[in-house]
Image (cartoon, rainbow, N blue to C red; front, side):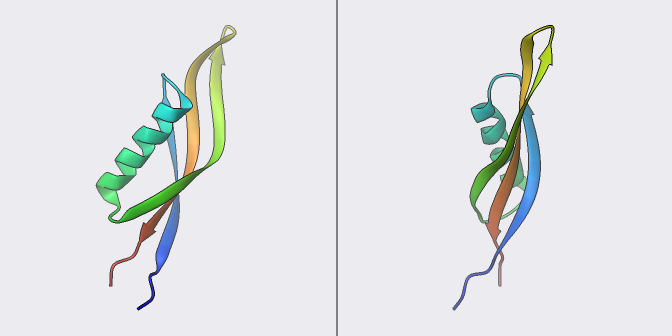
Length: 68
């Protein structure tokens, strides 16, 4: 029996760190998508105000296994 997976792109933002943005993104995706099996960070971005980082953003490619 073969396993078939799908990949979807999501974006998540945090006021703490890239790691927190990724963690929150995976947690949120897992509420909607079943069988999340992995993710990779496709892009990272920061927002800056007056020379200070105000938020960290990640674009994630989330992999989930399709059900039969």
